[in-house]
Image (cartoon, rainbow, N blue to C red; front, top):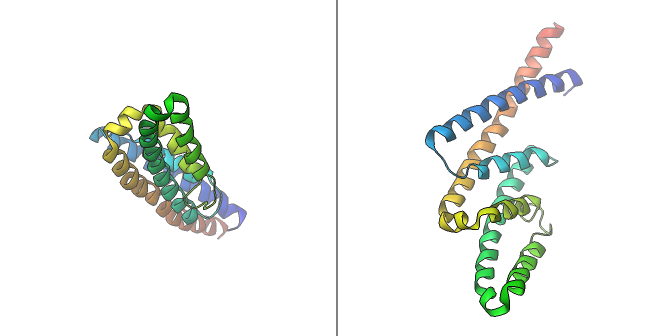
Length: 170
């Protein structure tokens, strides 16, 4: 893409993205969906990562899922080890293991997105434990749909940008 098309693409894509975000928020508000932060955190992460958008999509989806799974593993481990090892080591050992696992040896699934989900999900561990299936369903279904539409919006935004620059230059 040349510079004029790129600028126009970014304008159109951002406007389409804004409209999609407003539509999604309206749907979430009307339906009373809880834990929508799971969806929007993935979207923020997708657009802050570098690289091809399709790679970012999979990195965010897999990384977020692994982060949520490791959060559950850490919480179960802390619950099991605290009575045996005491509060300090019962907390510290599972946390160290999970953080070590999240080191990006396999960056597609073990990455900063997983760490972000681990961190945010631990803010309210009671809600996580009480509504665990809802957390996973909201993340998996919501973020795939929301981020998938964002990726799909790129194609019409690019086509519209090319068309408008060609029309302008004609």
